[in-house]
Image (tube, rainbow, N blue to C red; front, side, top):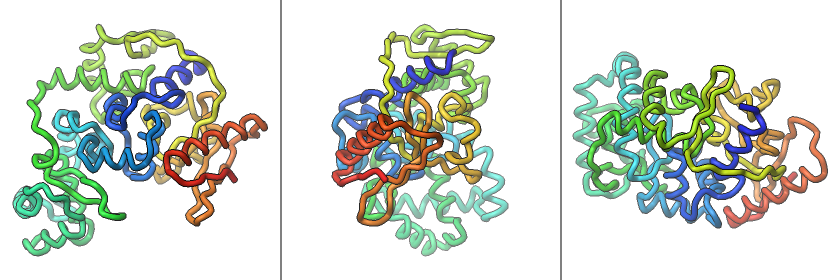
Length: 356
């Protein structure tokens, strides 16, 4: 598929060219999941795709449990819709656990017996449904004779999240809280594995297409075999195009996106950049290290005409500036487009954002 057509369609499927949904929860549902280890970046990722949303709207959806922050895939924090939490964890978390079990037992002493003790201690603290800060939960572990130091507490919470026992709740100031999943998210009937794979393919392609089976395997952390099977099961609801031996999958509802050179300010770790195995269609290879560091950190970026043209970051002081670092020379019209994109971010934050 030609790069220009690919990025044009993705800008629309991602809800970047125009909002995906009227509510934050529906935007998350339409995308399948948003990578969310950077909490504030994930709020803007959702807000960017939601018509008229403010940061309070997105945090309100998290506080109500309509959006859940947990580790459904690749051992990485994501935002997912509440109704998707259980089946996503059941489908994708076991592969992460299988890869990590021996390591955390060897390096941190968290064998099956210790993790069972930790589960009992934290269930007693959380079963009532009240969100509790991470530090307070670490104190509960210490009181139960399970040392939480040396990142052991974080590994315990991560393991229990993969077990569908805990997830993150609303923030307490700047601190994350945790809740017992059964007390926070309504119960749901488990899905057969094939049905979960089918649903995963639909969710992913709906929000990320055009995409390949390799992209789905990367995003989900599942095997290439599983990704192929998922797309085959969903094929009747999807469109596909094969060129040069590569099959691209798209949502079945036809769209005719309008080309635009509007600028868009994307947050760090945005799905438009990281939701695929290969980033070449949106990120010139010679600039990869200016956007994606060797440590895996993905910078906020400016997208123009579907491709990353600059990085940006907000200053930590009270000036409210967005400092833009171009990857190529920008025209006056593109600078003006960046200012318009910054005004959109300012409306979301309820605070001025001036471009520097």
